[in-house]
Length: 188
Image (cartoon, rainbow, N blue to C red; front, side, top):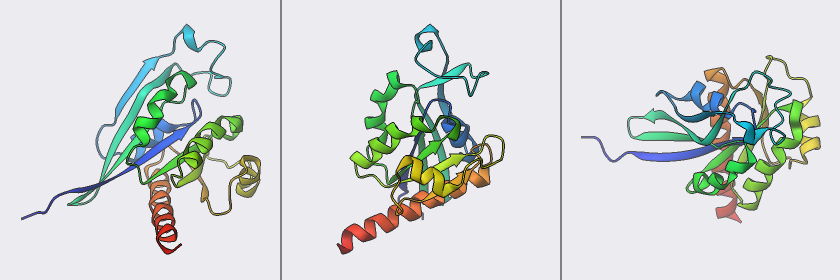
């Protein structure tokens, strides 16, 4: 007879068009729940889609995926909306999370700062994942770390949000970092 199922939660955040919905969809074992809506005139002059000119939809509430890690252990992955006008959702999505991913598009590096600030202010462990849209890492990881003023204790890696294995490695890094963060808090 199986015991109760335990769960953990990870939040994926980042700037508009950084690949959050794509990462959640790539790693989820179920068809992800998405709240994609057509972009409207409300985003004109607000959202910079020059790096993603073909983007016609945006997340207005959240993305949700699920990964069964064992018969009694489930990981829930929540993607945040990237548009500033929907950021009020972030607090609710972060409740109960063990850690987070800040997904970075180096074409718009400044878009990562609100996500970094959000998780640092809440003392929620996070990793930075540089999304390699064209499968190329255009900047050295340490240069991105320096530009974002990321502490050496925060893991930073390259990923391709479209590829399941790459997205899975990002989530593994979050779990490992959250465990190390929790151990350090207990020891100190």
